[in-house]
Length: 111
Image 1: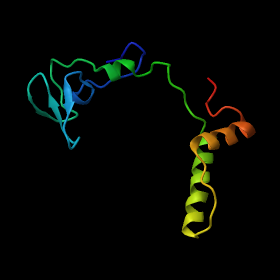
Image 2: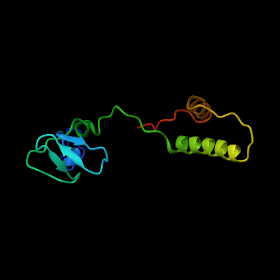
Image 3: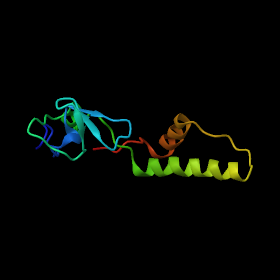
Image 4: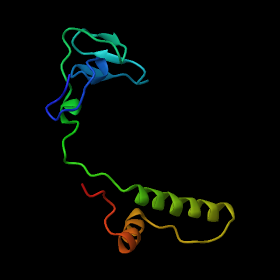
């Protein structure tokens, strides 16, 4: 089954509108049949959930791999400094983003 954005959606309990997550998240509870179900279970009354209907909607943005690597490097450096008991200021994400954008432009992939 494909949603209206062309994304392939598997017809199973995990993508059904009538599921409710259990505390352990290993199983789900079917609100229609009032019983526990397996995530990959399937029945004839399956209806696509709102989240699956929205999959592929172009409202989101993808961050550049270079930016994500930059954030990781900054955080690794801060962690190493902490382990070595060296005092360095920790940067907020806003500061990291600002530094990256000043050198490389937008943090988002241009489509």
